[in-house]
Length: 176
Image (cartoon, rainbow, N blue to C red; front, side, top):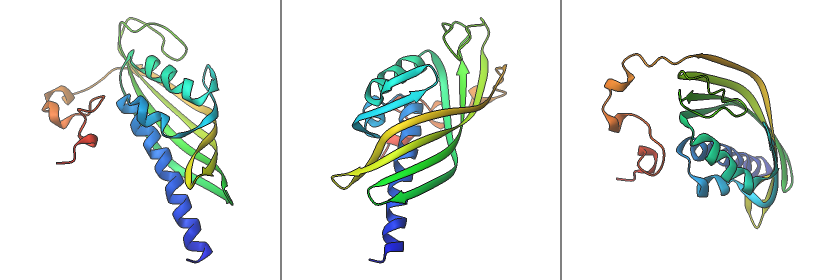
């Protein structure tokens, strides 16, 4: 295998971890979320600073008070150096905040449903250990955010199986 091909394979494996992270957050899948991080990984994002595996529980608990989320990754830069990679992944995250949600951090608890859209970047250090790429350190950067009153149009008219949901009932887990 050429070095160029090996680098492409490594970069794809790293990208898959970042995509898996987004699915895990949006589906509230804690086991899948934990699979993105090496043991001992550190995490700084928003109000949280500490071990990444503890962040997984923290994030699931926080987002359980949100009606739905949708994380989208855009630009992804990966700088490989042997078994270490430094990445910058641009992301946009949509959050439907419940009217009765408790106020904490970005979630304001205003008494009305709101849509919160945030743009930011994941600045990660990846390491390949025992042949597997995972995040060893994450720093989440917020570049902008916007709150607007919730608006669904005719979304609720869609059949339930045509709409995303949290947990293993979502079509992403279906293998039929």
